[in-house]
Amino acid sequence: MPAEQPNDETSDAASSADGEQHLGLVTSAGTVDRDALFALYESSAAVDDDQSVTVTFKLNHDLNKRLDRYLVDRVPFLSRTALQRLIDEDAVRVNGRVAKASTKLRKGDVVIATLPPPPSSEIPAEEMPLDILFEDGEVIVINKAPGLIVHPARSHKSGTLINGLAWHFQHRTSGQLSTVGKEFARPGVVHRLDKHTSGVMIAAKTDTAHWRLGKQFELRQTQKRYLALVHGHPEPHADVIDLPMGKHPTIKERYAVRHDDTGKPSQTVYRVLEEYAGYALVELELRTGRTHQIRVHMSHIGYPLVGDDMYGGTHVTMRDFGGDSDEPLLTRQALHAALLGVRHPISNEPMTFLAPLWSDLRTAVDLLRKHRFDRSLSVGGTLVGVPPSPSA
Image 1 (tube, rainbow, N blue to C red):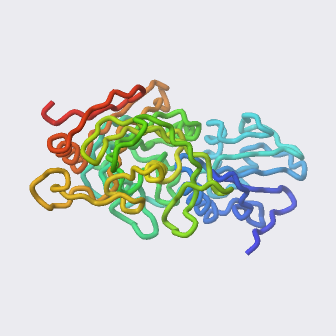
Image 2 (cartoon, rainbow, N blue to C red):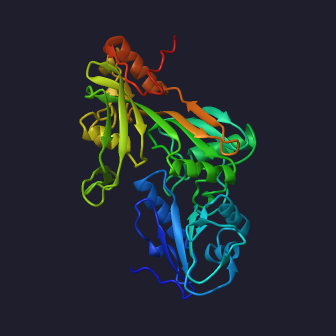
Image 3 (cartoon, one colour):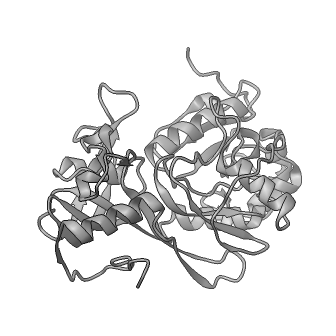
């Protein structure tokens, strides 16, 4: 179905991480459509987890309106206060320049606004164990468990990290997640991890913290390092994988290296920490944030992640790593977000968080060291390094 045309006051378009125009975001009345915005956020996240959605308005007539009042008319699901906050956080530009809420708009002006999913209903609180690494009045940092979905979706209305955080704030500490993204059950979510990837995540407790952290992720001003167990011994021991990625041409849920016009620039740095018989422990650095990036890149060069059967890895048992039972050990991708470095959204102080390995990966590494160990390597540029044994 063709996109609706905007009214005669403005011409409008939206864009996301794929860099394409999405006219369907704007209704025939010239307002942003909430459902279309959600769909665009989903498609944007499928390309790049750290990217946001922008909408562009070009004035065809001289409306002589303040910027904040103009946006109230165009984005009706956000309050004037919320829109003024967006302007204050430099999320709105007029003719390429930072603007004020009081900026008067004229014919020919181009307004580009970075929009969050709009605010809405409360998230049901559910008690669950959470490994909290840090918390203050602005942010909370979690070591996410493997198997835990970050936010509710159409098929998962409960049992998610967001439900657990809502209970945590009500019963253990105080505050709440930011209202940014609340309409689509993802308040406070600044970045995401796959369901089966464990490790460090940060969530925002205030709207100001959310916008400032989101900008750090979008501008690649954060540090992210992962640990992974892979099949084989990567050669060379450190390298940059610079291969474009996009949706798999035939399998809906998968991504792939794409050298056609659908491939987006993607860079992963790997550094081998330890080698075992048939396996290696690798530290990985993301220079871009494509969905499934580490899994696709490592599989493509011939070293898939252990447990990642979607991309060529295999599930393993205790016995596979030298144990004495056939109990399943890694039935998920052996990937852990080990380090996250950001600047505090209010104080601007640098903060670095290290997330200990979860029990399945911890057990796997310990078994490999005991029964399959080959050698440790000293590769420059590592930030996490080899995790110590529990007895160390």
